[in-house]
Image (cartoon, rainbow, N blue to C red):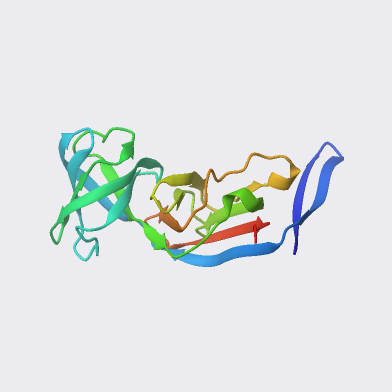
Length: 208
């Protein structure tokens, strides 16, 4: 199994780089996984640094069993892995998670339900090349993807710029982006205008 990685830099009439051939036993792709857009709201109650209530329009579809990522009004990630502890038709109560402290009461925020991809298997020790991208056509926003072990624990967390891929040529000496085998992936999208699509490619040499 082979993959072509093309990396070039052209400037001032000069070009450096070109195609790199990467060999591996298997390709482990996940193409065009839908990642729903976030929900616009306002932090109408701020209990403490990680607890509050976001008021949104009705029909939000968030459940009190969901985990969300919280983005700011520009679509940049504020807090990740936040618990939803209660919902009404127009409010979402949130708690815990990690990241920046909740903003001041009344601040506009975006609530992004995590998309769960399971079961998967990414063999960390065998990774030869790895790439991930969240595509949100025409959007200038952020996203996030998190690779989880069976514990579960994060073995690879990536904050993404929409439409910009992260590529790791592990066979060429770049550090392996996964610290352990992943059996589940979660992703979120900071755009409130458009759904996104997540694409993952992992080229691996797997131990028989």
